[in-house]
Amino acid sequence: MLAPITRIVLYVKNVEKLAEFYQRVFELKPVAPPEKGWIELGAGGCNIALHQASKTADFRRAAAKIVFGVKDVAKTKALLKRRGLKLGPIHDGPNSRFCNGKDPEGNLISIGNRGLA
Image (cartoon, rainbow, N blue to C red):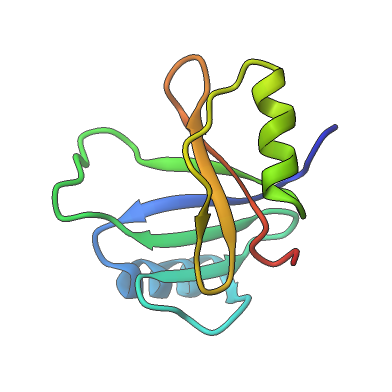
């Protein structure tokens, strides 16, 4: 296995409302202080991250992204490129570095170092 799945990102209309639901119903706990548009909840071996969706998001389809946790995003991106996976540019956030792509059926995937750096 190249990298474990560290979180599933759900793009949502209301981060706080959905976080309250998962905390109340499933007893999930935040793994870090909330950030603007982002709350991550511990769910066992894989976290659920609630991410504020854009105002133009199409909610007729489920919007989720599988995130593979890697320490070195640039090195892993280069390896995956050699294996035929096209990934977008590397993004640097306040607490993470990541890049996104899609599997052969169009499902969103990402490699990132949030929580690993």
